[in-house]
Length: 222
Image 1: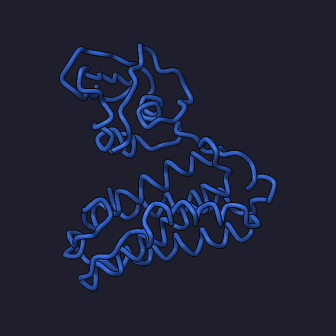
Image 2: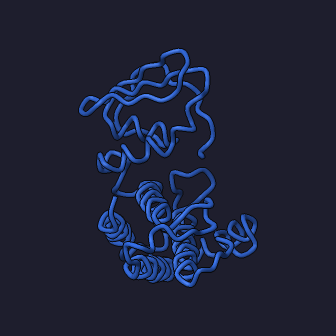
């Protein structure tokens, strides 16, 4: 994974919401209870919070990801979700641009600097941003779906989501193209389909093409 992948994901997202009208912004996203305005506000707020993680890490400081924690995060999303579409678009553009600029300042020696988000480092922050941008782009329920996820992203996301596999099964995913992937050490459970469909299912999203096999109940996101 490289910064170029995150730049590409951000460009895809901002192009998708360019000239979004108010009616579309108020429309339902694919996330239960969230409009597209909720999703856009969340991505913008996440980007600003991650920018602060980067900037503070460069100064050798550790700060909370969201001031006030999860309650403040949720309140900020609700407060911003119903803004005019033009304001949502402007906020998203400025927030993602700021984050990409912050990442672009990092030298090879900076990527291992610690941050509080997931008790990780700046290299992990870049991966987190990649996931947030690509997944939530599809959550908008517009022209881009999980079927558009790059194969490299699918393989990355499967690895990140390994903790979702129940302990009593071995989950075996057999894509129509590419290597078989498996997780767990219990009773074998085999699913087949397009790589993007298998990944979407594992991520709790609706696959664009069928996933064949008896799908198990998955554990929460890590």
